[in-house]
Each structure stands twice: as C-alpha cells, then as structure tokens.
Length: 556
Image 1 (cartoon, rainbow, N blue to C red):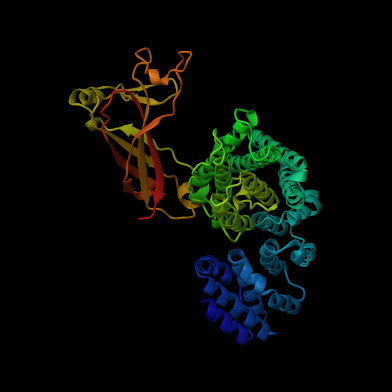
Image 2 (image 1 turned 120 degrees about the vertical axis):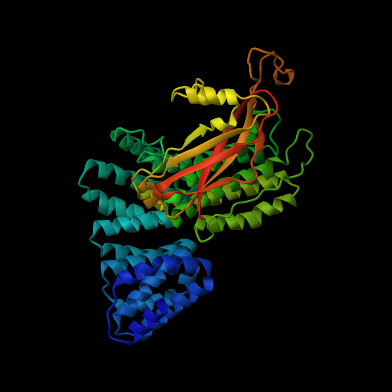
C-alpha cells in the first residue's frame, strides 16, 4: 500500500490525508523492525519521491511520516539520510504542527546515538522547531517521546519554560513539576556523571514524594497496589533511585578495593557489602520483571522494550560484580567463574547499545584476565559509563490510569478428595468447612500423603481488561510449583541441621518439591469467562506444603 501511495502522489497533483499513513503505522513499524532492508527501502523510496516531486506536498508528508517511523526502529538508517532530510526540510519551509512533530520524532533518536559534538547541530534544530508550536498537547507529546529516547534536556526545557507556566489546576502543576524534576535529574546525570549524584538523587526523591502525595490525594493506595493510578510511576522512580544508590555504593567499594591493592581484607564490613551487591541487583532485576509481567499485556512496544532494557541493565551489573568478586577467596586462589545468560534489551536505545558493547568488550574478557585490580578498574569504568548514558523511560509513565485486572478464584475440586470428605463437603454450607484458613489468610487443605489433589481456577476477564490489552489472547495458561514450608507440627522434633550453635532454629528458604513441566491450558469462553482444572502431583512425605500457581494468557 505504501508503495502505491508514494508512486501515486509523487506524480500527480493530489492531496492525501495524514490519517492514511497513521493507519498503516503499526504495519510499517512491525515490518521495519523485522526487516532492516524493508526499512531502508521504505525511507529511501519516500525521500527520493519527495525530493523529485518539488511541487507535490503529499509526497513530502509521506516522506516525513515514514522517516519518523523508521527513526523509531532504526535510528542509524535515519542518521545516514540526514543530508536528504535537510533538503526536504528546506523545501517544506513553514510546516504545520503535525509536520513539525514528525521532524522532531525523526531527529531525536539520531541525536542520542551520536556524540555530543556531532549532535550539537541537531538539538538547536529541535529547539527552533519546538518554539514554533503553540499547542500545549503537542508539546506534551514531544515531552513523552523525548523521555522515551533519553532527550532529557529538551524535555526539561519544554516543561520548565512552556508547560508549567500554563497549568490550569494545582494537580497538573505538581504532576508536570515532578516530570520536570526527573528530566532535570537525568540530564544532570548524563552531563556530569557521578560528580553530581547528590543533586540528581535529591531531584528524583522530590519527584517521588510528589507522586506519592498525588496518589494520597485520590484517597487510594496508588503507589503500592497495581490497581492505583500512580503505581507504575512510583515503582519506576523507586527502582531508578535504588539502582543509582547501588551503583554509587559499588563504585565506592571498588575504589576502596583499588586503594587496598586489589583485595579487601577478609571479614570486613566492606567485603560483606561487596558480596551482597549482586544479590541486591538481582532483587532489583526481579522487581523490573514483575512490572513487566503486570503491565506488559496492556502496554505498547516501547514500554516493554524499555522495561526489558532496565532489566538487562540490572542483570549486567549483577554478572559483572559476580565475575569480579569470584576472583576473591579465603586462600587467595582464583575461583572458576560462573557462566551467565545475559538479556539483551533493545540495542536501538542508547543504553541497550552500551550494554552490548560492555558485554562483549569488558565482561567476556574477564575470564582471561588474572588481575583482580584490573577487573575492578574495568567495573569502575563500566559504572561511570552506565551513569552517563541516558536511561529510557517507558511511555506508560505518562498514563495516569489504573490498570485493568481480574480476580481469579482457586478452589479445591471435591471429587479429588475421599468419599467421606466429599460427602461432608457437599452436605456442608457454602463456607467450605473442609478448608481452613491460617493467620495470613491462606487456605489450608488437609490431605493424606500420597493422595492426589485437583484444583479449579476460574474467573471472568472484564470488558475493560480485554479492551486495554495490546495483544489479543484466547487462552489462559497456568504453571504450578510445590514448595516445602516445614514440619506439620512446630512443637515436635526439630532437625539438628536447622539449629545453630546457640540451639536456635535457623529459618530456611522454601524448597521446591516439584514443578510441572507441561503447563495447563484452557480456551477462553465467550464473555471473558474461563475455567481451568489443574491436577497436582501427590506429595509422599508428611509436612506443610505451599502450592503456587502462575497464571498467564496466550494466543491459540
């Protein structure tokens, strides 16, 4: 379709509605992401047709829109076409607001992937284009896209000098001021690095407090529950603050390690802190992954890509520190370094491209180097590079709407019980007398060792949930895991292996007893209803066990 449109409107005097290309945007974006050759041919053909047809405005509109689409997926291709784009901008002259947006969208990704000296000529062009825009909603759209690509200088300029002065309500002012503080903090961090870390954290903490205050005004717990309006924003900001603090703590420990000759004394607090740093980054990566699981179904591709990049950023720091501290042992000998599977993230983003270069150029050669001091220096340089690299923010950050959710009911199938228990359950009331509830609100089912159990998962997806889902799904998938929690009676014999020197019981993490290899699945019924039976493997040993069920959606 796009080839027909380009050929038609570049050779004839005709007009074209911009909505036609907007309707084709999802197809063009997906095809350009999957095939770099298609993206190159698309932008080349559009620019050639626009430059040859000097008196046809329709071809120029198509060229501007295709260049902005390709730039979001392959910014390097658009950078190679900058001379042709400059000629196109000269032919357009005084563009409208819609065309100005496409020009800015095409230039922003190019300015991030270039060096500061090379991109100095692009940002003044973006600033001059922004000065021509009078619509506040258009300016806010540019701010969203600037956050997505890490152009925090432009975002802070628009928010502080244009939007904050035109706020009509107090809530809008505080919301835009928190965004301005985030942009100012990230821009300061990119320009000055770790030397201005205190100023950066002060701005980010102030923005986090403002968002928590806005959530409290709504009368709901919007920062701790996924159903809250500001839950996503609060979680992203909190994780970003924790990541910066962990990087600064690791950097200080690396500096002390270099001053000590490449090794920290055994048993010191600094050595224990460095040993716990990978665990903290692992926890932070799990928090990013949890956000991805909750909001991935209801978010655009840019939001999911940014969350994967943040997850990859935490996993890279975990792997780098693990490789560095694996050199240290009690006897001073070298340990065998573990192998890690590294998530890639989005290589088109500046942070994704940096992680790819650090992974291949700094992390992999660590197994060859035998010098702990050298590895520590490389870790220090990697932290400084990550701190100065712009971190992408998800576009979902600007949507102050609660996510749609559904309540899943997990009940015990009485047919899986013995005949006597099933008869008692049928004759009992709806309170389920065969199921007890502990102090934490968890349902407790009493079963004999070796007897199979069958659960039924049921629920209804509301219409708002189905409409907000970006990916249309037709299946519900569940995976089960069984964890051993402890003995059946706490006052009975205690295993000596769980007792320390003082005779106190040492708490242990739940041990995985079994985990299903093949997931259970069921087709979604009309109206969003679903019912999925799950057959659990029998447990042979006596004790307290916890059944965990992970539910997801899929495409049939």
